[in-house]
Image 1 (cartoon, one colour):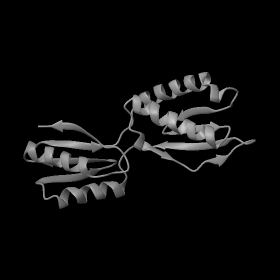
Image 2 (cartoon, rainbow, N blue to C red; image 1 turned 30 degrees about the vertical axis):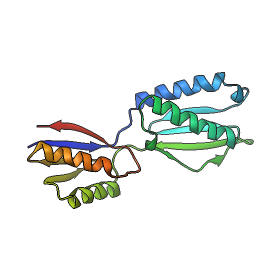
Image 3 (cartoon, helix red, strand yellow; image 1 turned 180 degrees about the vertical axis):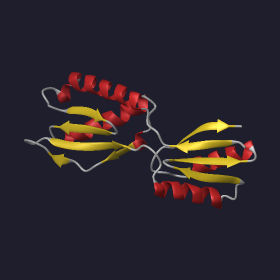
Image 4 (cartoon, rainbow, N blue to C red; image 1 turned 90 degrees about the vertical axis):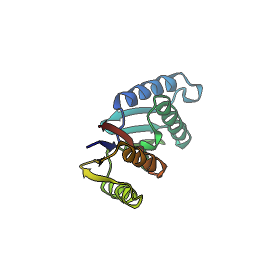
Length: 161
């Protein structure tokens, strides 16, 4: 029976490459000259430290730009509220959304069921498995889900005949 999986993953190697290029750019940019701005990744979160709010906003733009260049969707970023650090510095945590949470999974299942396509959807942990009798039904399900607006990027993998 043909099937495919719906997942939400971020390539952490590409995120590391983007962070390395951001560090290089920060070290050479004139407006960051003499600042103590840093960016580091620890598991699924990125820690930003900037001298002030303006530099933090510039680091947001750098992060989005460099991730997009590396083909990582910037919608996978969840910015937590900035907090004060020592001196006038500002610290912020940015979470990388990985996996499909329960509410989004239920919403996607409801969307597929409401579309009246002849496919079955099963929630398997943090991913969804969609199966059907015909390949065309699965492709129609993918097309329908691409039209649905979600707050995090989705990938369609393991398409099996």
